[in-house]
Image 1 (cartoon, rainbow, N blue to C red):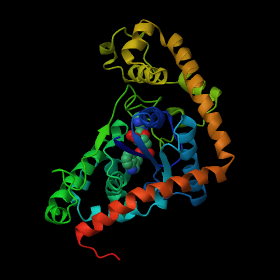
Image 2: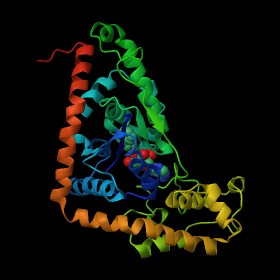
Image 3: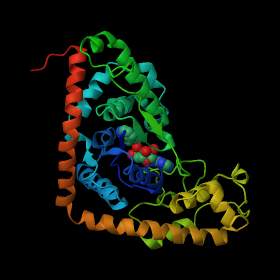
Image 4: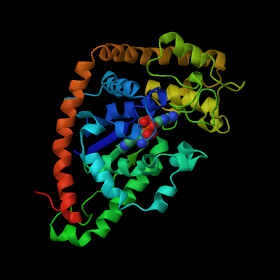
Length: 344
Ligand code: TYM
């Protein structure tokens, strides 16, 4: 079966965009793929995190995975820092990827802001660690939201350059898989009606963990009242919903709410508009709030139960890390041999 890898950063405020753009997709892929889902704690510390809060946030992302329906026995759930292959392979990729490639990363530019001199070196090199996450398992399928597309392109370029730079060594060691080289080209899976969930306060900004306005996002830990209130207060325009998807163009707020409805109900925007076309937001918003509460409140409840038992959550991570290590270490050893490093 094809191997899936994806990760979520434990930086707090896990939100509806993470859930619909990534976590629900992770859940769906379990029947048809072998899946590795990682709480990427080493990525989180590219921006300073309070150590106590970080520990809670790592468990919270783990709890969200489990509460959403990821099966940690059939698949692998772990936190990145427990498998040293990620950091080791990232160093090798730091030496393969080019400054120019990383300079083009829009997420770095956004996160570093104007004061680039003051950004951590880790924040700049972050995409190489992400390439290492995926390629340490030679994973081929990577479900992500739209905002990760550029990082996946970089991972593909890095895999190709490694295969090219070390082609002779790979051949001599007999480690090429077919004519592809040692590393496969990982494929981003960016699908469904919610690959880019937007802020509830501003339809031109994506929903984000770091938005200072809590009303801009629905957190996975929000209770029913908070969910309903945030949807009621969401920015909209005064027009009724169109009956065709084409009518959502130039209406980013309407498009966003229809996309959220579609993703929560497991249908398409077309199907939502077939049912709700012509409705005013005064009618559509309460329907969306009911749906969101119905789908999200049970997850928040299960997350709370899991968070009350941190020893259990940590045991899931330990078990997943041991199984992840067993896959990644032989691949990392091959990489060391390919590069010409001596190991004993
Ligand atoms: P992160 O932690 O920012 O987000 C986790 C996942 O949620 C998706 N996402 C969204 N989807 C739709 N609408 C939104 N508003 C929205 N906001 C976030 C993200 O696209 C992502 O899929 N670099 C990654 C984590 C990572 C990773 C990896 C992913 C590290 N290593 C290897 C895949 C493979 C990140 O910062 O995601």
